[in-house]
Every structure is written in C-alpha cells, then in structure tokens.
Length: 78
Image (cartoon, rainbow, N blue to C red):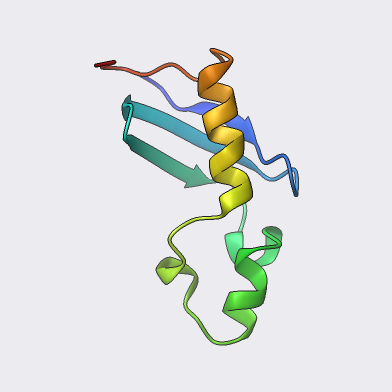
C-alpha cells in the first residue's frame, strides 16, 4: 500500500496518508508542520515542540472525510 495525498481543508497543506486499519493512521507531512499549520504553528511559537503536538483537528477531519469519500483506502478494513 502506498501513501495517498490529502489536503487539509483549513490551511491547504498536503500530507501523505496511509490507513492500515480504521483506527491506525500514518501521516507524513510534506512541509514543515510548524510553519504550515495554523493549529500547530502557534503552539510551536509558544515553545511546545512540534513532535509533541498530537495532531491538527482540521487535518484529522480532512483525513476522515477522504476515507468516507473513498479517496483514502484502508489496507486492512475490519
């Protein structure tokens, strides 16, 4: 299975997504999340390491929508 592109509905940042199972999502940022994401950037600017920000809610919603619309497939659906 290869990663599939998903654009964030809030900021337009494109990430690569692999859905192994319904609860397991692997996200690879194609840009610097701390600079590109309107949700992550302020937290990093306040001193929080980008790697410690668990996710962006807008991106999570965009990934969920892509799965629901069949644009991202799940390798091992339950």
